[in-house]
Length: 204
Image (tube, rainbow, N blue to C red; front, side, top):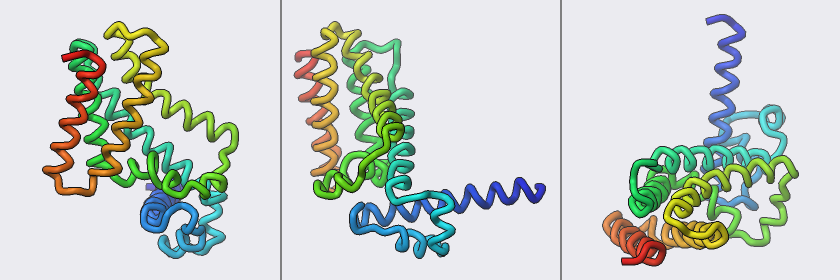
């Protein structure tokens, strides 16, 4: 390995370490109470070095959102079996959503709860136009996987869009209230939530 390749590898490793530290601090302290100096200390970097990688706390948070949405999209798109019935597809997607919450709790919190828990802090997280557009594209990509299933089931476009937003919110709410309970409780509640959602959309 040449000097150039080694430096690039070290740079990528440092970047990954910064993101891991930021993710941990955001979850433990919340977005507003986490500072760039704290992140620098957690990664044993000088604050000035940290800013060479990420110009702001907001940039770090947006990067974590990007990563989280990419992981969620991979889970959903992999689970979407075009050969299955719409009902079976929908059931599989719901399972994939809950599995993502269970397997990647930190990223799930980053996407759905960290800033939302601190309503006043949302004002601090003012996204640039390109950042907001990129994140919206990622969220819409996740929702479109499910929307395609509902269209196959014959739901009109407008109703399908509203149904996806409603289901998305309900699934996130189930995770918020039950993911930290005993595994058996989480499994029982998510199973019942899936049954109710499928019945509401597809009937008995």
